[in-house]
Length: 344
Image (cartoon, rainbow, N blue to C red; front, side, top):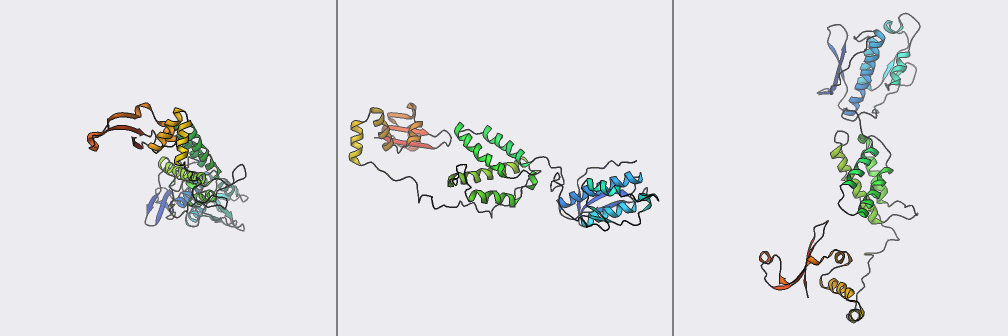
């Protein structure tokens, strides 16, 4: 029994399509060429089938030369994507003048080759083997594996608070709603279905529809995942053009009109009463809030060294102002947003 050693070289693209050269009809004869079309994914699949037929050819004939029967099957697979074999009469190299032996057909079917015997329905197909990428390379990464890696990378490099990292993790966990598949199988249709689901604000565990903000940031995080996947698994995933996908979040009758924060103001008399009755720290908070347009988040980040009393601005020469005043100058840690206030 002779089993050939097949070379795993990339398919060559010619004017007639991708070509695979394999075996010959006679010793010293020309190598057989199989033209597999112009689609790289289909060509990679048909290449696998033809190689399986050649291996079976060598096993049955105990030779590295093509026999007419198996060469005919290989040519059908290259041209049609399926093969049909006549059941009568069987060629010599298969029957050896003995009882008909169709075991080779089942062996080919066991490895996914679409071969039919005359009288059976044809099994023509261009379905790709799941472990072959459209470029003909072995598929290595599943979608959920990529999500695991992205989750670890995103949380591990997050510079914000623990609560913020957990919020991001909850959004990434929603990606597991996608059925697991090879990365190359994550196509436009699956991506659009995921986005459309979140555009419609799916129900939460409490039975209510999720908020508009949560749906928006989940879709935004999903697009970050797609970009990360394309960059880190370029051999297996190419992000399709998603410009035509609508990302607008639907509105519900229960949504509040406009800004949910109501405009509530203190009157002048009320502010005076607060200052009369409040403790010094409360007076400081109200005063800074009014003076520096600061809310709770800004006030919580202020440090003693942010105040500059009875002096020129720290960058007086740069701004060309030499007046002596009291200043409050801050910078947000994460966003590096600069803020200055001239204190009364």
